[in-house]
Image 1 (cartoon, rainbow, N blue to C red):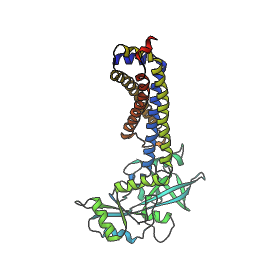
Image 2: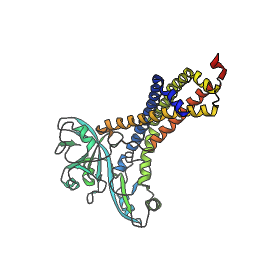
Image 3: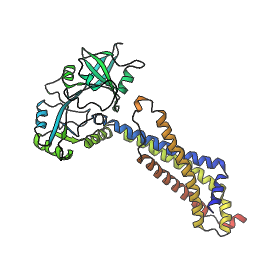
Length: 377
């Protein structure tokens, strides 16, 4: 009976390909939009991902993410270092600034000042240059995405810029995850960043710390908060803070939720209408099968096999189209690091199953209500 059901389905090419297209399009829309949504949320934690060392981040209680910080006094560093269980602790400064290129263009950038002695806080990988080059006077390093945007068609290495009336030279390019705002990030030493960025008496944005062996990051966070009154977060918690900030302060979840919902509705509409037309056009065949003794249970299996075949093919094409789209845009620096989380195809699969189940149940009602005698009228 299953073979008969498949022959009935493939015997009508227009409706068969229409069903496959409906599932494929719905899968593509749901999977692609969820993939972009997840990756955009991850950009909110780019400042944590790009910190190559340290499991604990200490900040003022008012601070929320790496991009939303309230400056602390320099004494906060000594307070953190004095906590039992801290292996090492270094300062970090993060602040917005404006630079003027040699062509006279004005660009908004983020200045990140890392520890002078250890360069802790730098990204792990460099596209060009060496971390030790950062100690050269007037040298900064720019992230690769920012370099592409600021110097299209030019070699960023050696470019001279004006940063708050001071001369800086690009001496390296870092391999980093781009931030949510896609603003270029300049890395320099902490002492030099203090000179580049004029400000108030309190300048330090974060303290990056590492627990000694035998103490977990969570335990160290509790110790630091109890002894210093500052806010401590583990790497995982600070990552989550950045994602939650994007969710709470932008319309991204709502807008992407609408798109995903539309993908589901479109799938139900296209597949439901096409499947209903297919059943209606083949109602005589189903009636004949019932007349020769085929039970409703067997017909239910036939329709399930038809829906399963359409879903398998359409879902496969939809996922492949999503992967192809991500691959096609992978060369775009603003899509750097985008990937398809394994959970997203599973969510799309669940949506496809629901779409097929709804449309199959609606179609089966017509078949079950058909009298076998109607075939002979």
